[in-house]
Length: 343
Image (cartoon, rainbow, N blue to C red; front, side):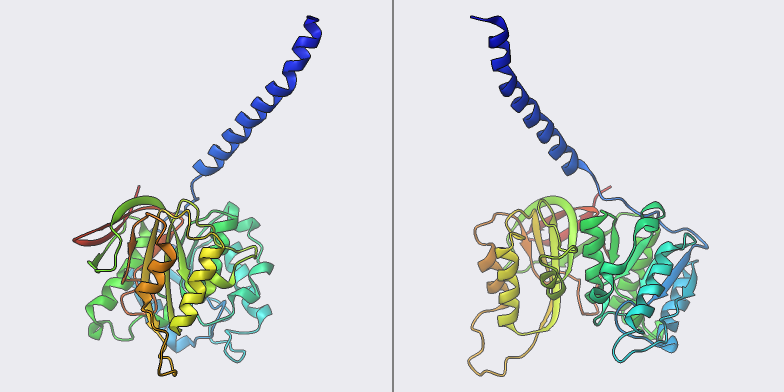
């Protein structure tokens, strides 16, 4: 046989094998890339307050300002604090400029959103994260701020903090309920990073037992659903997903979970955490005929990962600070649920 012809016949197979190995290596490398964590805060660091969604007054943020200063931080109020354009914290242009300014300011080490509501999706595509990538900082908030958490997570792989915002700080700390105090202090713990976060929830009969590890992602269910097909769409493969919502009918919750399932967001999870869901009463006397737990378990029945209900996150007093994009361990057993941040 002609030696040159024989060797040349091996080249396509060799090239394919090399390409396969290269692609496999690239895929494995991409999967191994961890989220980038902004630096934890230290004494004297600055927290900026801005309103990328709903409006809030100077008086309403004062309890939050005083509390964060008591933690040893300095607080800077953005131009959108006190601004109002109907339900928004200023016009789209004002909210965009205020948040952009804080993203670009290297002296600001964390950004606390004033409140949720609606509005972040109107400005997220105009935000420039080029300076932020060089000088990252913690973004703090929940509800509508889920838009920003998902955008950061999917596009830049920076960790952020899903937690209460300025409108949730008690006006009188001495009269606050223990759960309010504990959840607000969890923000301080998350920002300082002096200990790994760990949360527990009581046993719920609808839980599916098991243990899993993965990066934590999630937030408001309606916001997550609305991001489908956009540049901010949440990525859930190999991750622990947490969701919460408020003021939705059961049939609407069913539709949103079907959307997640059909979009492939539930099939490759490591675990599912169901937080607070304040269901809106159906005016139809017949109702929907299914509970929240039945709705969820119907969508994940063919998957084997652990699922827990009634986790302390959401539009409720028991709303603890969770680090999105950080690896956690989820344990669901007969004693209850534990969500533990991993080093």
